[in-house]
Image (cartoon, rainbow, N blue to C red; front, side):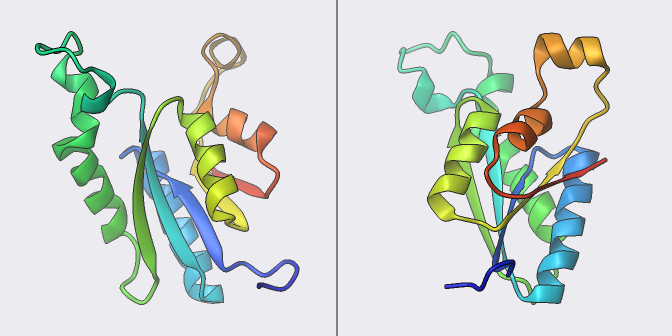
Length: 146
C-alpha cells in the first residue's frame, strides 16, 4: 500500500484532442519521475453494444470510438508515454465525467490528469464540462492541463 501522498497510479482520460495529448505528456513526466503506472481511459457516449437493432440508428461517427477511432486515440496517447512507464489502456461507455469518476473509484489512482478545454461561462453552464465535473466531484487530486 502506498504511503500518504505517494503517487503510484495516474488516471489520464483521453479523447484524441490536443489538450488530451498535453495531459498525457504531463502525466508521463510525473509518472517517470515517481515510478507510477498510467491508466489511459477513453470514454465514448455510445458504442455498438448500446444499439442492439439489426440496422443501427446511430451513425458510424458515433459508434466508431469502439473500433478504429478508439484504437487510433489509444495509439496516439500511448505513443506519448516513454517505454519505461507502465501503461494500461481502458475503454468505457457512458457519460464521460461519470465514467471517469467510476473508473477512479474502482482503480484507486492517487491523481487524475485531464485536459481542459477553453469553455466560457455560458457554454460551461449550459453544456457542462467534463474536466470541470471531474474536478468538482473527484475525491482525489485532479490536475487540469490547459
